[in-house]
Length: 180
Image 1: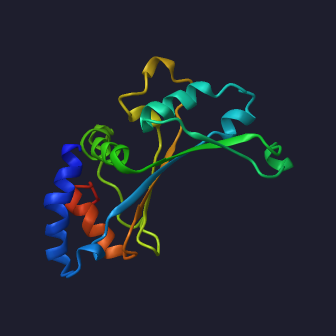
Image 2: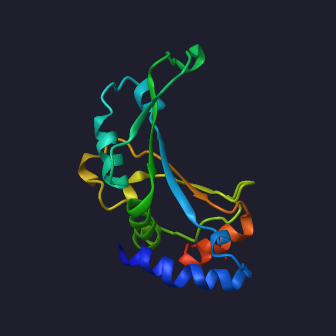
């Protein structure tokens, strides 16, 4: 078990339970999964059929191979045909999720130039948190010399509990950098 996960289970969750006034341990909000998405539709539509470098970069970022998402129908205005690759997605759970979260909070977000924090307005109705990163090159695993074009990355954190305030309290306890 990683140090971050152990700290999360032994220190953060009991402290959060006491802060939120929750009696049952099973009602404390927990992170269920982290989903990473990268759109490659414009890259493929511009004539580049080989997106293996993006796939390899995404695999280095997530720690596992991404699933390629293909288009379900043709849209002529976007020069999109049915079955063309339009995105990649990775779902992280367990140890990989905690490793990615620790890396995101401690290394990647502080590395961003002129970083002032992430807006806390990105919670949806169920208490899940969504935010985007404009360039995937901020991750130290991505070799800077091989990058053809920087791509954006969307990160979704799914929480149990279903309450915005509880989810934000959990991210605050983890040390997530929100704007002040």
